Amino acid sequence: MKKEIKQFSAPVPTGVLFLVGGHEDKGAEDLEKKGQSKHLEVLKAFVDLLGKKDPVIELVTTGSADGSAYYEDYQRAFSELGISQLGHIHHDTRAEIIKDESGDGIVDRIKAADGIYFSGGDQLKLTSIYGGTTFLCTLKERYVTDHLVVGGTSAGAMAMSTPMIYAGNKGVQQIAGEIKVTTGLEFLKDVCIDTHFVDRSRFVRMAQVIASNPTCIGMGIEEDTAVVIRRGIEAEVLGSGIVIIVEGFGITDSNILNHDAQEKIYIHDLNIRMLSSGCFYKVPRNSPPHL
View 1 (cartoon, helix red, strand yellow):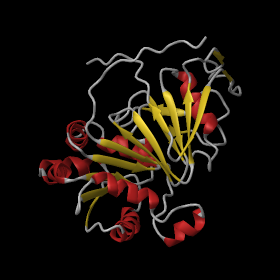
View 2: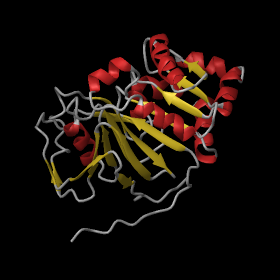
View 3: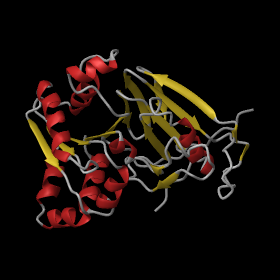
View 4: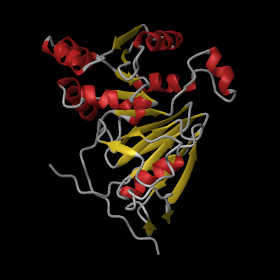
């Protein structure tokens, strides 16, 4: 008999999360590669969620080493979707964001934005630069209290979760204990986001994360695919690929504790869901909220 999971309440965000598995269609070249895509489908869904005729979007390219190239790609795509107000935020060091905050300009931009979109790159760069900053605090406060749409693709989506994977590629994912995790930006708690999930064969590394803490659920998002999360827990899938949900509540055995022995991982009784466009999933709340 499946054990019933008790649900706990927490503050309900007014904002919306928009998590993309990477390589979303940004124009004719991407459309040709994907084949199955509807033109700009994922980015159009993000714009539609803003709910305004002339919205302000801030594109954060900090995760990337070449923010200007990312900005140019998104500027072309968003322009085609009618967006004329696309700002660009990029920091390569923590000192840069601290300096920007001292002038209040960056915080004012976050307060004025209708949507924030984090590009791909390195999720650890995002957390190490923005963790504990007024920039991030303001962003999270607005996500909870306002109709702010916070989007991220690839590393930008992975950074939204906690726990957050930051290392452990295909070559080592079968070895117990080789997947490295840390605290993410915490827009979602007890949820681990992974991206490029099918294309880069990342199921095993996600399973390891869930075996290490079965309170969490894993959400693996394929390329050109998005998960829209409303009210903090109501997830809807859209785009050309699939989303794989990994639940570990029913795990009966694993060798995750043998992380010093270089053993291949085994896990018994994971629960897996496969979702595609139009599917819904309710993110469980299993841990009591606390200060």
